Image 1 (tube, rainbow, N blue to C red):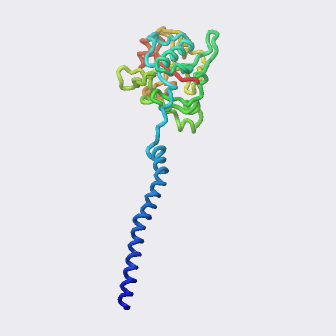
Image 2: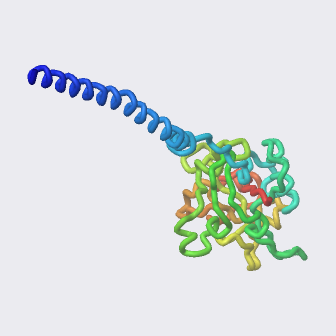
Image 3: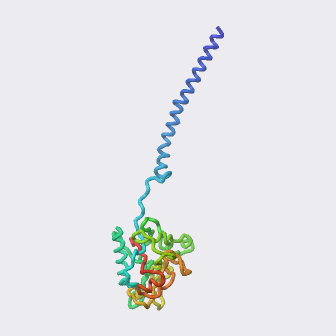
Length: 256
C-alpha cells in the first residue's frame, strides 16, 4: 500500500513538473515574445528614426554657389546690380529663382558711390551648396570673426564650394586653374578704404589696367589660402584675370 502511495505521489510530481515546463515554454515563452513584441515598436521606431537613420530629411535647398561660367568680359559686370542679376539668372536656371541672390562683392567709395561690404549684403546664414551641404553657419563663422569662430571655420573649399550646376571649380593642379574668385574684399568681408583700386572700378572695367581683389575657391596656392582675399588680379580684362588663375567667377549667396 505504501509503495502504491509513493508511486502515485511520484506520478503527480512528474505531472506537475511537466505542466510547469510546458507553461514556461508556452505561456512564459509567449510572455517573452510578447515582451519582444512590446519592445519591437520601440526598437523599430528607433530603427526607423534613429538606428537606421529613419526617413531622411530632404536636403537643404541651395543658398550658395560659385558662378559656373563668367560673362567673358573680365571684371565688368555692370556694377553690383549687374553681378546680382547674373547670380539671379544662374540660380533661376538651377531652379532656385524664388529667393533673392546677391554677389559676394564689396564696393569701394569712389566716383560718388558709397562703400558696400560684401558681408553686409548676403543674409545671415546658414548657407548650403547645391548638394545640400552646409558651407557656413553664419557670418561670423564664414569670416572667422572671433577666435572660436575661426577655429570652427567655414567648410568652403574645392569639394564643397560647388557651382550652381553642382560642379567643382578647377583649382591648383587643374588645367585650366580657375580658382581666382572676384570679391573686392578684405578677409573680414569689408570693402577697402584706401585710394587703390581693389574692385576694377566697382566691377565696370574690362581694361588691362586696374585690379580686383581675389579669393581662392579651393583655399590653395600663392602662400595664401583665403577664400575671399588671397591676392590682387593682374588687371581687369579677361586675359588678365586668366593670367593669375581665374576666369571672372564670383560667389553668390541667397539673401532670404
